[in-house]
Each structure stands twice: as C-alpha cells, then as structure tokens.
Length: 301
Ligand SMILES: Nc1ncnc2c1ncn2[C@@H]1O[C@H](COP(=O)(O)OP(=O)(O)OP(=O)(O)O)[C@@H](O)[C@H]1O
Ligand SMILES: [Mg+2]
Image 1 (cartoon, rainbow, N blue to C red):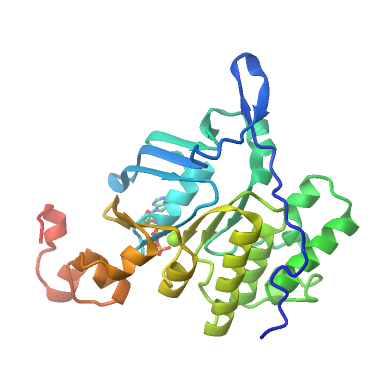
Image 2 (cartoon, rainbow, N blue to C red):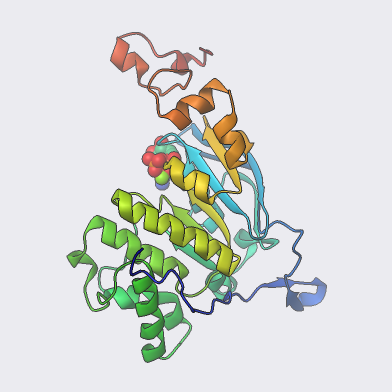
C-alpha cells in the first residue's frame, strides 16, 4: 500500500532506566505490571483564577493507549505539561512509574527522561539543529556515536514517510513535515511512555491514515504506554483503549472507544459528532447572541 516500512524488521526494545528508589536509597527495577505507569490524584491547576484542571484523578496502566479529548482550551495540553513537569500543579500528586518527579533533582529527572517521548502540539523542533539531529536528540544526549544515532534517526524518518530529509533544517519544512519529524523524535529512542499532543494536526487525510496506522503498530510492537490528545475521531476509534473527556476542568467521562461511540450522553454526542448545537457551553455564546453569558454567573444551562 505504501513505501513506509511501518517498522518492518526493526527490533524495538524500550529504552528506560526504569528504577524506583527503595528505603535506604537502593534502586530496583520498576516492573510491576499492575501498578499504573502514570497516576494523577486530585490535580488542580489555575491561571489567573481560572480553573483549568479542577480535581483531576486518573490512572494509565502499563501498555494502555489513553486518549484525552475535549474542546479547544479545555486544558488538554496543560494536563500533559503538568505530567511532564513543565508546569507545576497548584495541588495534587502526579506519579510516573510510581515516582513523583517534582520531588527529584534535575539530575534525577534527566536520568529518567529517556523513558519518555513527547510529540508537542507545535512539534517544537530545535531550529539550530538539522532534521536528523532533532530526531536523534535523546540518543546524542546519551552519547550514542553520531553515525549510529544518524542511522536510527534516518530509519525513523523513513517510517514517518520522510526518507532522505535528514540534512534539511526545520525552517525548510512544511507544518505537516515538522509534525512528522516531531513524531520521529518522540519515538526514536524507544521510550516506554509516549505523549502525543495532537499527532494528526496539520496532516492531509492520507498521511493522517498512515500515521494512525503507525501509532497503532508502534503501540503494539513496542508495548508503550501512551497518552494522546486527539480531535480526530478516526484516530480515537483506532488507537484508544480508554478515552477521557475533559470538560470545564473535570474529567466528564472516562470510557472505552466503543462506549464513546455508543453513548447517548448528549454532551459527548455533540462533541463526537462535531455539532455546534447542543449542551456544550463554549463561553462565547453571549458574544454571539448579545446576551449575558450564563457561564460567567456560574448558572447551569
Ligand atoms: N502558561 C500559561 N499561562 C496562562 N494560561 C495558560 C498557560 N497555558 C495554558 N493556559 C490557558 O489554559 C487553558 C487551557 O489551555 P490548553 O493549551 O491546555 O488547551 P487545550 O485543551 O490544549 O486546547 P487546544 O485543543 O486548542 O490545544 C487556556 O485557556 C489557556 O489560555
Ligand atoms: Mg492543546
């Protein structure tokens, strides 16, 4: 069907220090398959008095593909940034592999970073590095010889449908190409937990399908645990074990992809079907109708 190898014979083994501190400071491998890979308890985050995350609790189990959906501005990217430690929650706990990253020194965090791959919403490539150096960033940080790191990066670029562009600079790429380079970077070092913030944004329908298949294959072959933010319902259906819907700062529902498709809940239906009419409150109805915004008064509608 396509030239993309979608892993072909590539041997995938997760790259992770995977250790937990025991009493007395000794470290032992974290291998409890029943313990959540990511665990949030009562997480709150506000900006200027506006609650973006309001008492969020969730567990993501080993090997699970968890997809978060929600309106634009619902707090999906903030959720990922809090888990990654890029934003500090106002309260609550977040554990990755059973460890609280906010408790750690920078050195301890850096040691664990190879466990994790991240595709940021805006791809966030390093402008001063060429494409292959971007893709191989973690491998180079881990002192892999440049020739080997480049080989692995080129393999990943081929997988995302971009063979032979390793020497280009990010400024030479289209938005969709940057997104795919970001994806290659997220998975190049074989992380065991991957965060994808809107992996299909900016891709044409055909490439969206290719990347959906790639993500699915990646998930199955690498046994990664993933947290994906998605608006694309085809991706949600193809790729999720569990779906959480964020709405007004809370997890409005946590369901399987099938339950999401079958639910009669009018709010979820409106979101899934992408309709303007329905119970979802956007906060700009007043601007459209000229009426006061009921949300501002905290009234239910
Ligand atoms: N660093 C920040 N400082 C202040 N406000 C912020 C910051 N980051 C996010 N916000 C606010 O938090 C809210 C949620 O933002 P977030 O980026 O998580 O939305 P999102 O659900 O990812 O939306 P989209 O689907 O458009 O990407 C928004 O109102 C945003 O303006
Ligand atoms: Mg976002």
